[in-house]
Image 1 (cartoon, rainbow, N blue to C red):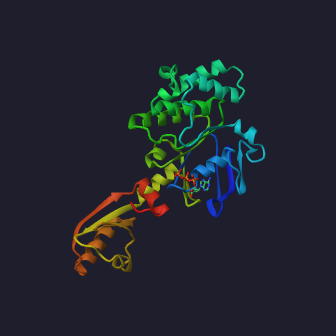
Image 2: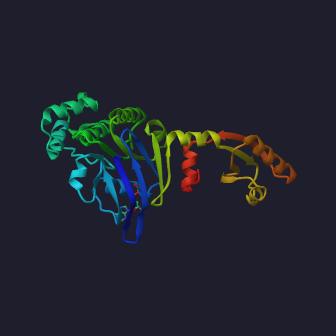
Image 3: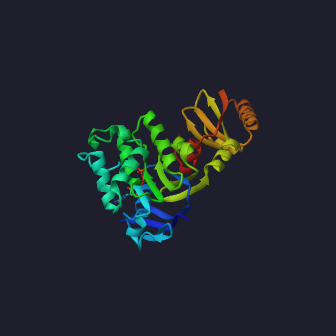
Amino acid sequence: MSIEINKLTKIYGNQIAVDSISFSAQKGEIIGLLGPNGAGKSTTMKILTGFLSPTHGETHVCGINVQEETIKAQQKIGYLPENNPLHYEMYVKEYLNFAANLYNIKKPKERIAEIIDLCGLTPECHKKIGQLSKGYKQRVGLAQALIHNPEVLILDEPTTGLDPNQLVDIRSLIKKISQDKTVILSTHIMQEVEAICSRVVIFNKGKLITDKPIAEIQTDMNNANYVYAEFSESINTDIFIENGLSFQSQEANTYRFSTNNETETRKAIFNLATKNNLPLIGLWKEKNKLEDIFHDLTGKKQ
Ligand SMILES: Nc1ncnc2c1ncn2[C@@H]1O[C@H](COP(=O)(O)OP(=O)(O)OP(=O)(O)O)[C@@H](O)[C@H]1O
């Protein structure tokens, strides 16, 4: 296994940021870490990269215990932290040279040229980092994470704040550079996980609540649909539950039900409305989306 996280816990004062989390990843996998704000994603990444110590538990990268042999483990890891901290006053090549020196790279000039090409930085590589667009700054962040050709890449929200075109470019760059590596990336964007990850790990309030291949999640999505019922006034939702309907959430006077048989559920809602004089004005179905699964698992209302 390239990455192994075993019963990891981090407590800040009396706040449990990460609560006994375990998962592993092997070469070639791109794992998407999903979770609401404060779920513990960044803390887990910081521990995995050796920047923070856990309160309990341990992490291994390429068989090396990160807590016991931090420097050795860090040589295997490329890390793009949240908010991509860069030295804005440095030129792109100067910064990459600085990063190459940190890792004691044998032929820095050749490696910098290679990485500039790989990350699509050639047209902007003569500029100061502060003069670059957000998308190019992100490319510089990725270039520094890759300079020592690490086996494992840890990317904390690598696409936050990018415009839709830059998003597509950076996602395909991540896919391209990940082919022979193990990648863990955190994101708030479900489509991103669907677009580039092979597996999704969902965190909520410091706990790991789902760890599944994307293909399995997609099968779940195809099997589980939603039915929506709109009424012209607010309805006491007890009536749905009492009648065996799996009521999920409400937005204004529209109520959402999960179902494996949407025709039967629509019939049941229609019959319930007729029998109890409920002012039903709309009834429709919708395919489940990864976003819905995420909201259900993390207990957030849509
Ligand atoms: N240095 C710290 N001191 C105290 N509490 C902290 C510290 N760093 C993080 N926390 C708390 O730990 C919890 C987990 O934070 P973390 O940054 O890991 O979440 P996250 O999932 O990365 O969130 P986001 O998506 O907003 O970046 C939060 O409640 C946060 O306030």
